[in-house]
Amino acid sequence: MPETTVAEVLAELAALEDPKVRAVNEKHGDDHGVNLTELRALAKKLKTRQELARELWETADTAARLLALLICRPKAFERAELDVLLREARTPKVHDWLVNYVVKKSPHAEELRLAWSADADPVIASAGWALTTDRVAKKPEGLDLAGLLDVIEAELKDAPDRLQWAMNHCLAQIGIEHAEHRARAIDIGERLEVLKDYPTPPNCTSPFAPVWITEMVRRQREK
Image 1: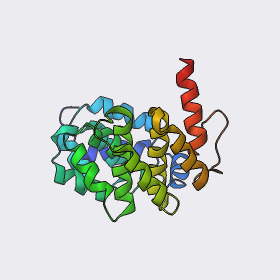
Image 2 (image 1 turned 45 degrees about the vertical axis):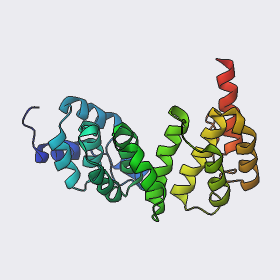
Image 3 (image 1 turned 90 degrees about the vertical axis):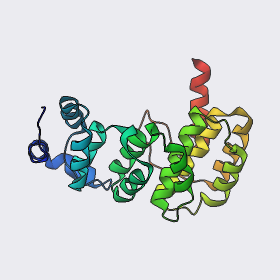
Image 4 (image 1 turned 30 degrees about the horizontal axis):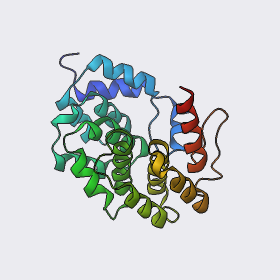
């Protein structure tokens, strides 16, 4: 699709619209009705198209923005541009894909992690914590893990939903990956009881940190 226009892509997305998919997504705050498998297939057909990605983002359409995140070139964005994109990404799926598919691959990820973690907007701060969780798992050198646990212990219980979820993930990741901090991470989780009663489908791991940590460590030991 060498000369595909935004209008043509929007028409394709409109053709993929499924009211049932939209109804399910809207329960999670996502205003689009495109099956994600079909969205990924369209992205594969388009291949990497940075300028088209920018144009699709500017439409402010959620499905178009998700597609943009799949066909963009993550390292082509400047730091300030990524900051603007995050502040424009107000639906959960666009926010998550931006952080996971684009920002994590950017040379500006660490600068943004530090800036976003301290942001007054809890949704922005949640992105900073998501990047911190990624570092806890993949590149913990230089992180003050005990200090992170101090912050989590003090702020997790009363954090707004999106931020609480991100901080809780970080708590679990510290406990899973770092045995020297495991007992404290579990203790914090048990005392705060955040997400203790979260409804968890069969065969899925509870997001309650003590259960999550214990289960993932058990799996690691069985490998």
